[in-house]
Length: 305
Image (cartoon, rainbow, N blue to C red):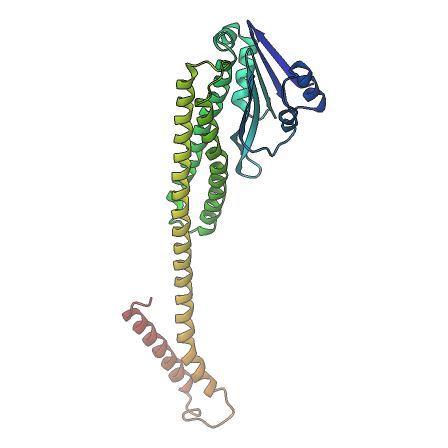
């Protein structure tokens, strides 16, 4: 089974990675007061963030962003948590590196166990959420750097690449908004939780996490506005370049039209003025060149070129 347990003093931290039916059954036997619906949620990977409050424990479902390099988008990494008097249970898929590292450090280092588990389960519960929340900002910094790269390349000749970058960035930012925004309500509810198994002084600490989550929400909202402006700018630039191309092609067509008309007359099988003159070819060629240059000069004068 993928269940590991750390016990220190009066606190037990149970960490379950990719829970199986046997893991959930063992958890229900160890904690028979857990609601069956909460245990059922452990096997669901589409659960929305929520907090269920009971007399003797809290069941919290939260999501934090994870970068999916294959799809080039941030996807939600879910963690389900039970916290009560003397115990903390975390259930996840193992992809949330801050949580995995924190559990391993508490398991391997006595000083870490004493610092976090020695102060009660609620302190360990807060520390897990705090580390996961802090991990959001490096992801947002990377998105911000990608936005700057798009801004630097906005006026390059390779507009297709710029449009592709903007499209991927916009999709990623929308995904980040969907992940981060619901967490604000969860942390706000935890800040106001009044339960004996949640230490009263932690209200300030949860308030600090709430400030960080709100800051992350504001950052991703700002990034969304910026990428929308960049998308509009890229559309305008692309349209402008298409208009330039169409302008050049139109000028070429207008120049060729009279030349084609004149040469078509001399392609007809009827007598024409000057057709017996041995210099007619050069005269006609010179006339076509004069017409073409005259049209180019006119277009240049009108600033159409």
